[in-house]
Image (tube, rainbow, N blue to C red; front, side, top):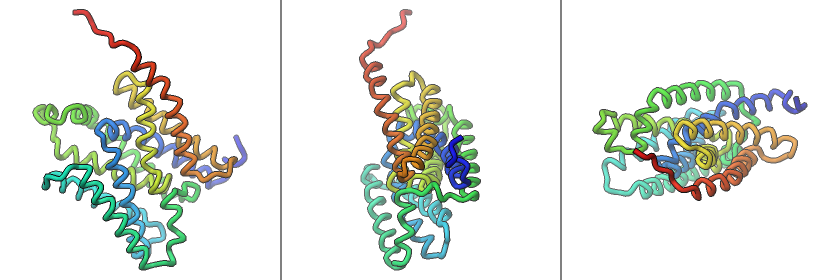
Length: 277
């Protein structure tokens, strides 16, 4: 075992990566299939307001305010989508801009806290506490169990929403539940990669796995595996190379994605086979 892995802070960082990497990879399969990548980006940027609110209320670690603000914004997005004729990307752009502006204004009221903002913008997984790791484990179990419990319904909803509705799936409730799962995962991932980069841990593993997967089951398994390799590998590489951990995780995932591109091209070049009745 490398000497630096004996350090308690590195052990906590690796453990957090082991928990959140596969979780984000699993969730990312459905996020990318439903074209909700920009949604996760909007939620991630709204975390800035949660951080500012947490600082304003005197929280030492504003994880709970971040979760609250992100969930509120997610519900607002769904409500606006159902109650107005605005396009989804328009709603997301408006809320993203408004949430970032609100966060900056609230931070300007407390100029002595700007120095603490870096670890939330770009991630600081090396400083996670045992409580953060325990919270990550609890949320991972809840999100993972919920996804697998409603895997069939969610798959049908992802493939065809109208068909899911006529098949008896509670589409509205499942949509809200799925959005809240994304929101909680993104809010928790802010400590891992930061507001700027957290979406990469959700989108890139799923995009990488897509090049190799032939069906949904393979896509889920490979997405989990790529998320695990990218997150853990990024943490381990960042220490001996003396690089910031969050960007190193993202670059590790991006490298895996580049490696997968030839597989995508080979798969697309093969002629589709048809079964003979």
